[in-house]
Image 1 (tube, rainbow, N blue to C red):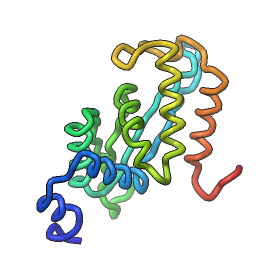
Image 2: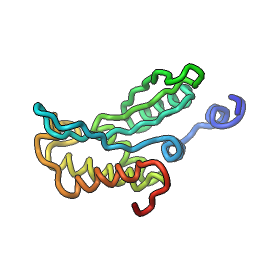
Image 3: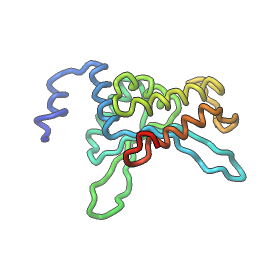
Length: 175
């Protein structure tokens, strides 16, 4: 599709409402995005630490810049656009939009869950995890510096393992 058809053309010709932008973003997240709970390894100096991260990889920087605008101006979520290094010289350049701040991941999950289809379960689990951690150790605007300071509940551990299972490659409905 060229710039005279598709999303680019439609966006220029018509003002989108906030719910239309969020529905488009949810569709894009269903196809390209990832909802992850990342773990650090336990060492002598620090305990196990888990943080929420939402990423959207793409080879089209323009689309990710549009997503970044929607996040920033529609729902006030900050993100960072990262240029990944090329793994092979003949491959396209990959860009990754990353949302990793706890407040931003919480707000994004809360806003997108009603619009998501394929990744609704992952976003719902992540929202439950973030709500649980925030209720035990801080607020959205003043979270505890390190969530590793208090132990993970059984439900939080289950959510971490379930999101890991759902993010595994391949077909695995009941593994």
